[in-house]
Length: 313
Image (tube, rainbow, N blue to C red; front, top):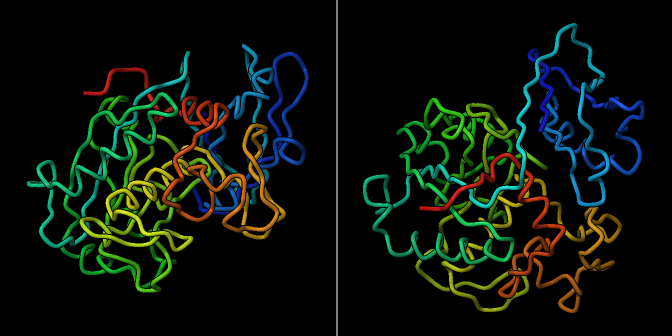
């Protein structure tokens, strides 16, 4: 992963990556989906090479030149490199004003642990396990402002409250997730910053994903109106949004015209209960049966630097 960052906050647009053997990766052709982070963040564009199994041939040893367009005269960047796909992901769980759940008792909370166990089961389909889990209480000011999210546009301020969980590379290569009481609009259940997000970067408005905890411990209906256990539903939302942060797109978008860049995921031109991708984790509506992860999706999850090689504790 290479992440160019405009330190002044100006809009950054990725142009191309010149490769050692002379060819270039451009962002206006088959790789155009890899410019999506710059549309989300504005001033940075986390870029993974290779992004999909079809692009494995784009990986070459040697010096590369990443060209971006920006009004700024300076540019920052950082690179994360690994030799093999990962199989474990660490989570930093921020608890934002939840009733009865805090960092001290989270590891013993039955509903939260059932939710995380479901997430672990969902990701097993991709050969990935949850690794180290850390719990943090949001500050009183953050909890007051965001326990109920009334303005989704301000969620960047929430994820920007993250701090490094430690000083080692292993520590910082962890995913920040926020559990809030709910969203005031009544429709939002989760928001992820990044397709993919900036791995290992904490304290920015792109450093995490936010989920509602309102369904844990109860029953609800999924996005298609099917009754579902609240812990399982919360787990599916969490796994779905973390999937976005690691680089997965919706299999089919609600407009019926846009689809993910992976060749082994079904597509649906009009979102309906009979869509062939309805059982996929990345279907745009959380469904009671949405637990399928295809081999290409598993590839995307595994090559992100946030999934590390190791045995989950």
